[in-house]
Image 1: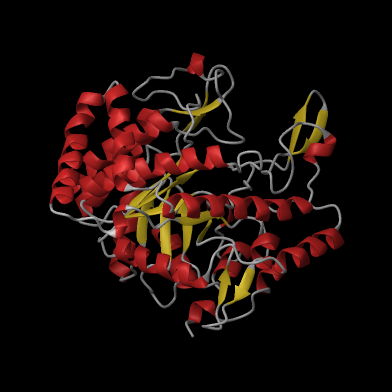
Image 2: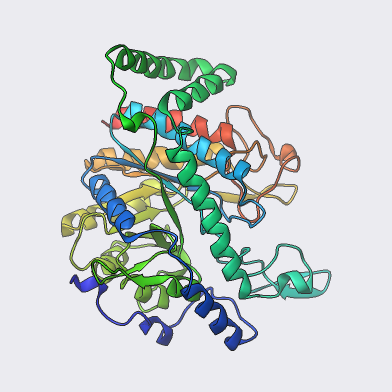
Length: 448
């Protein structure tokens, strides 16, 4: 048994647990946890093991991760159309990246569990009324009323059921013909035809089209053309939820968090002596940690020692979120020292969270150019060090929202109010996401 999965699954309860809701009644929380513990697993241990193998390929420079989805999912958004649109966008991006990079793309949704968010303040004040901050649908409601903002532990159970619905839809779409490679490519052709940057993308889309035509003429029609591997992920923020959905696998006798294939620790909860690191070090899932611009190389090495003492490729991923203005200076020391240590982690770029600002109308937003600049800096750093840029982690939606400014169909700050629908942070819309995919494809080709 590996060192990183032995020990007490409840040892975290004796440590500081940041960003947890203040529940009114501990007995109510216990009742919900007991109910959750009776529910079937959302994912299976074998699937988690398979993702760990895929991430080991990423760590070795043999694959690329595309991870994305909502900033914060909502119960209302757990429906067929919303899930289909997000999945469609993710698949379109993956086709472009797979062809351009000539390596497998590991597709991970920020879906089926991303119902909770850390907040900078525990309460919010409007018009003299102070209420608990909105922490995601798994905790309370978005509307600013005492009833909606009550931290309600029974929402954890609804989060589980909405995650089950979302995962069921994802499995059906990815295995039932919707993800057929030719169909996804046809969607990209439609996008290129209507895109202001269409000529820039037309050559790559044409290359993909000729490759598919050639393979079809040769009689090649493998199963991989008709379905895709798809994995779920979310931030393991609400520890009562994650613990209740942790089970001992009947085949291996090892603990897995069956709420998701991959779970991550956020920048605000990665304290070495904190409850989140303590809990996640005991589960067998592949795990990730967000690293912001204040992270040091020693922080990264200490997290590796704590979370991946056996140096198992695929076990640990670092998701860096530095900000466009800082990535070129802050990232190299981390990568250099980790590489020298002999640890094999996957490096993924989150170009969203370090680039948020408030627009003049009061909306929280991000500039598409800043998102692209951070990704560009991420690739430049890896190219300079001779290391592998392992993937991107983005917040996006398959809908035509107006939440981030810029992109091929430019959105400016005065447009944000038109379709600003996020429950938390601003997301790239479908067009901006596909613009990014074509640009990342170009960056990858230059790197390799």
